[in-house]
Image (cartoon, rainbow, N blue to C red):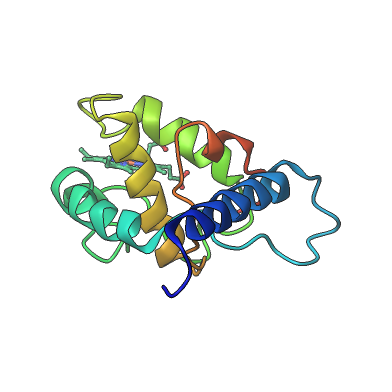
Length: 137
Ligand code: HEC
């Protein structure tokens, strides 16, 4: 960046604030879908955690094996992103429910969002921010 660090920090803070304001705003009939719920780095970390803790049942491609698919039509339109996060952070992985750290669940959620066509943005998904996302996956 050519600008001063201070300007860059302010720009990032402004972007984060704007992102939160968008998340908190009521959705107007699905117009202008909110973008960038997570960062690209988070989705990469989430892919690793998913491979370790989820893939044996849900499939390496999220296609479903002994457990439902986590991508595609079966997921779309049925539950909000917040509901899916709440379910998986309390009930998954089956056999050791709630055993992962909140940041790990958030990263896995970022990976699932990516796999379902949601774009990355500049603000990381957190256990707090995800609970405000009423958009369906
Ligand atoms: C030992 C097998 C197993 C593992 C490991 C596992 N799951 Fe599941 N998962 C299931 C089963 C079985 C269901 C269906 C449960 C039900 O319908 O009550 C399920 C359901 C889900 C659902 C709801 C899907 C839907 O269509 O509503 C989500 C989301 C989910 N799992 C995420 C995860 C994540 C994220 C991980 C890794 C942290 C994980 N699961 C690990 C077996 C597993």
